[in-house]
Length: 69
Image 1 (cartoon, rainbow, N blue to C red):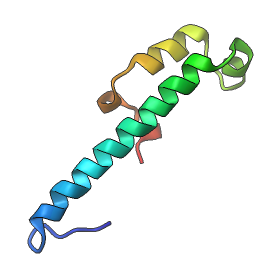
Image 2: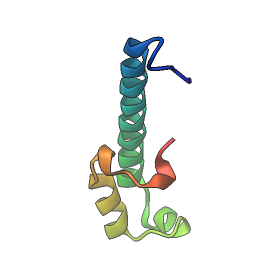
Image 3: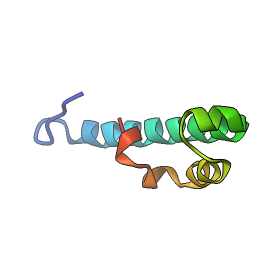
């Protein structure tokens, strides 16, 4: 959604909040999935158990560019 600040400044704030909520939701889902994966599944995606736990514990605002969207 493209919003012009000059035309609808309130919609810009809504779009920003919607983006943050989407990132938070995605990170919560990733966290849950990483905690429940087996060691074999983690190995298939190239992660160790320790790396998966570290990734799951990261706050959503520190998400890497690969999962921003």
